Length: 199
Image 1: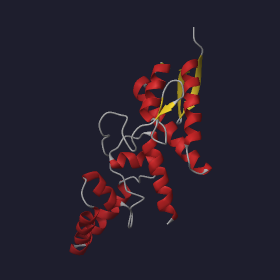
Image 2: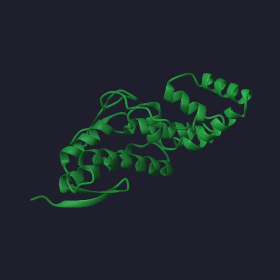
Image 3: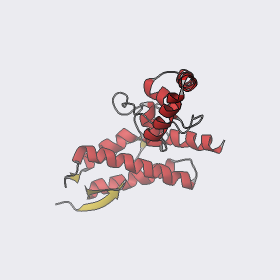
């Protein structure tokens, strides 16, 4: 009979067996050690990665009281990998992999967000360009023409600005770009967002 532990991961409560809890703790410690950002940024990235782990656990066990097993923790940690692009095996050793690649099959579906990094005004045009996979200049020209042709263009922009959520976290940045929210990808967006905000 195995011991089980209740743990709050990414704001959600899960029941993990003892082996799964120890493996997840080791993964998170190793992940934090591999981050090459400031302590404040480490806290933000760790919060994002825990949120992503919680999403993946929830997809498997749902809201039921099923116990998260070691096999599920192994699956999630191998999917997420490490921030430097390596993946961790069950012994804690890591091996190299390609940069900015997906460990999940296929591309993730794109979601519509306002782009907080490449914005000019509110990030609406940039977000629309990522979602529809067109040049941002085209979207901006269309918005400008709509604005010149009448006040409806202004109100459309304002409504979109209010209605479309901002991609203010690395996980949302990944969703906006249509790539899986792996640890490597989220760490990349966390670094690029910090560099952009400093400008």
